[in-house]
Amino acid sequence: MGSAKYTELGSFLRSRRERIRPAEVGLPTGPRRRVPGLRREEVAQLAGASVDYYNELERGAGSQPSEQMIAALARALRLSADERDHLYHLAGRPVPVHGGAASHVHPGMSDLLQRLTSTPAQVITDLHVTLVQNPLAVALLGDQSGFRGARASFVHRWFTEPGARQLYPEADHDAQSRAFVADLRAAAARRDAKDAEASSMISTLLDTSSEFAALWAGHEVAFRRDDRKRLNHPAIGLIEVNCLSLFSEDGRQRLLWFTPAVGTDSAGLLDLLTVIGTQDIVDSAR
Image (cartoon, rainbow, N blue to C red):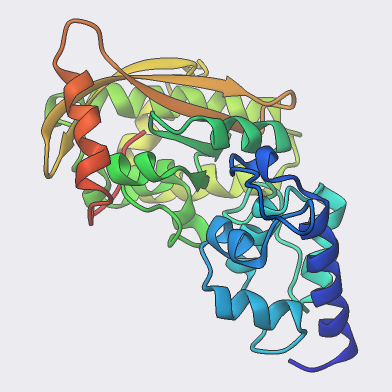
């Protein structure tokens, strides 16, 4: 990189790293710390980057960080919305629109997600764009970090890509479709009537999916606050879980976490996820 702006980016990253206490991000304090903040390797781990790459960023060298890397660093360093935007400006990247895959995760959601280490959990937007997942959510549902544009929304993929439905038993597809449409109508109504993101998504789905158009005409409305789901996992088979939701104050983000359904063998199956690890899954279900 090499410019004065990238040098400032490195200094900014270092200043944010040094203010965070390890316990705040679920890391042990340890007896040999020379400074109270995080080590470079710890930030790299939290952001999913290599240590060498993060070291280059703090030195103001190396290649320009991607928008996805900036979003990951903002989450790892617990940046405020203003600090996150500043980081994008320093990196010479456009600040992402609210609600997209690189949206700033609500700090409270991020903190809770860090503490949910023994159950699958993830943060999504009200339009079902996955913002961040813990390792068990990746193992259960697949890695959602690679979707961009309209495809970042699982609801969009559900109605436009048959492969998106593979984790749900076919018998459950109709019920899931109705629930997604009712939830989308509730989310769109909560947003401003001129919200381009929601209106564009709805218009596209009305044009491309006759199933969505028929359900939309029914005017059903209901937020998805909790669900009992059956998921077809490629390694552990059919697993039945409860999916619970915690909404942010403005309703734009949701923390989802998955618990075993009572009366099933799902508790043992979820335990297997810690052994199996991340699977290459065609798509995810929520």
